[in-house]
Amino acid sequence: MNLLVTGGAGFIGSNFIFYEREQHPEDRIVCLDALTYAGNLSTLASVLDQPGFRFVKTDIRDRAAVFSLFEEEKFDIVVNFAAESHVDRSIENPGIFLETNILGTANLMDACRKYGVGRFHQVSTDEVYGDLPLDRPDLFFTEETPIHTSSPYSSSKAAADLLALAYYRTFDLPVSVSRCSNNYGPYQFPEKLIPLMIANSLADKSLPVYGTGENVRDWLYVEDHCKAIDLIMREGRVGEVYNIGGHNEMANIDIVKIILKELGKPESLITFVTDRKGHDMRYAIDPAKIHRELGWLPETMFADGIRKTIRWYLDNQEWWKTIVSGEYQQYYEKMYGNR
Ligand code: NAD
Ligand code: TYD
View 1 (cartoon, rainbow, N blue to C red):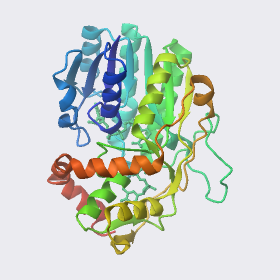
View 2: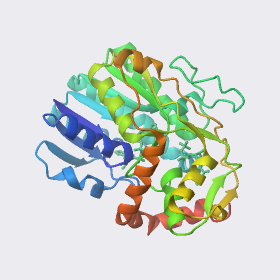
View 3: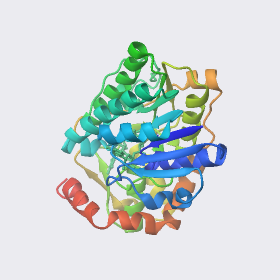
């Protein structure tokens, strides 16, 4: 099997590559990544020189480059992780989200059509459903919940997700789509909630909690997400959407307090800052379909996953300290300076 993983130098894509190398060492993997601010080749150091692995620095917006790679490689499966992924950045600059997340996805699917790829899997997000109210804990996102996005990020992901389903219906492209909740684990870029709070705690910097910190996310350990995608792309039905989530809802403020406690830091580091524009209140996934059809269940309890994650950031300080120096400092100042 020849597999293309786009966005494999990012957080989930790299964890997926590690998972695949371990579970299916017989498969060949090509990782395509533009190495934007969020992509880091050093993350892939352990697999870069392995036989059966190839890294290609390409931008999915570059249609000609994408087509020429497909011509050369004859992929069996394409899994699309490549995306601009940070909501706050999409509020600052929506344009690149439309280019990468929508047009880039279209380029990949057009190449899949032309070269007869057996499966295109689109890694989508639960954010396409918008949000749920805090006072209705009985409500969950199912695959039938209407698409109702809030941010330029989630809107661009919804467009790509719907385009994938349209390519199935219109062109018979063998597509599957997964909509997952928030991930955490090793190699997550330190602009996202959990790694940002770990990095700031270790530096005794203030922890910027948006609004009141009551917003709820449904956290899933990244390896559980990787396992779900692997199952869907190999055994899932084409033309179908699968929700992925582990019934692990937590308020942001509680996550931040857990991190402080684990690191032995005081809660006085918490600073409530101006809320995110259009901030989604609550995400909560109903994962019944993927459990019923593919037998998937999350394996990592949050208490274990968060400890493993904190341990990883403690043991791999060089990885994230390189990232939080330089250009990232300007980003941080711009986003949090006057908040
Ligand atoms: P990330 O930002 O850590 O990684 C994105 C990767 O894509 C980076 O390596 C980057 O260099 C690459 N990339 C960006 N633009 C590109 C382009 N134009 N061409 C080629 N490569 C490009 O993101 P992540 O958190 O690993 O998310 C991966 C995917 O999973 C995204 O599609 C995201 O929408 C989706 N998702 C993420 C979460 C989450 O909690 N992180 C949850 C559900 C779904
Ligand atoms: P994030 O990790 O950006 O993921 P998403 O917005 O895709 O869910 O944020 C998770 C939650 O944490 C979200 O409700 C916003 C909040 N948040 C903060 O309170 N402070 C921060 O500095 C960041 C980055 C996020």
